[in-house]
Length: 292
Image 1 (cartoon, one colour):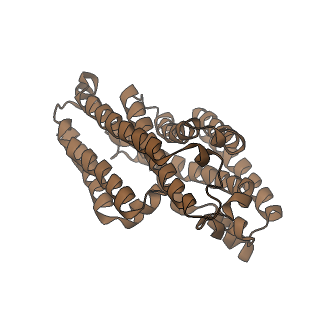
Image 2 (cartoon, helix red, strand yellow; image 1 turned 90 degrees about the horizontal axis):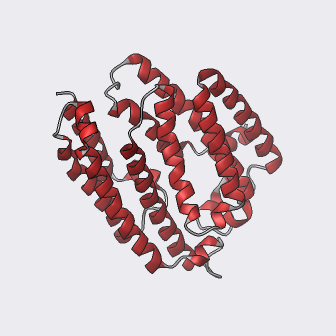
Image 3 (cartoon, rainbow, N blue to C red; image 1 turned 45 degrees about the vertical axis):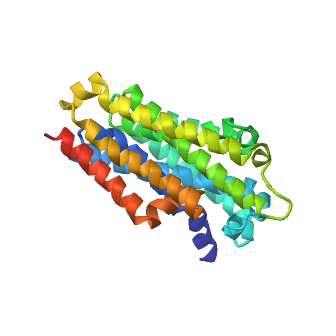
């Protein structure tokens, strides 16, 4: 029973909140009140969450040595020795195989994206996480793939701007994550345990964060001002949602630079009321504007 409990913990259900990007195409195509779209998006969210969970287990197995040197990650079941590799590896492989079979029966394009995501993460864990800047871009690509899944299962055409905005926002989040990891690693004896962190500096990351902040805001503004988007939603008032996006990004920067948070975006969503409330208000404002 304890083994099962630790395996479920290793699936990191708290991190599944990242998969809400799957709902973006349904919401922004005005199908969020139609049962068929809701059902398919929910099913895709659940299945892909199991995929990401199994991938997390694989990452924990590969990184267990380095995780033991991390002040927080050392408490993960595999790194702490509470869940053995002999138990975790076959369980994760069996779960992944079963879920992929269900996804293949559900939607072929979803299956191809999920398979690509798994391959990308395997390559990332083995090689790409040690390549400066590429490691950031791979993390960001994972969020774009989530949006693509939401479009695939509901047969929704995705505008380039939503993919670009998603990618830039994910780059922003990944850079903040790296910055906080670097700060914490510098407080440890011996310095950064991860090879990539040894190549980053705080000044470099701060410069890239500034660029990512600006480009993310600009891309969203261009998205809401795009004639194609305005024609699709039959409104030119989407620019009213820009203040919510500005507040959300600035609030995230405040939490990162003043409170030392940001290593885990999901923790901020769960714990910071102003940020989460603003996120909900942004979604509500967007829906309200496109519904009239």
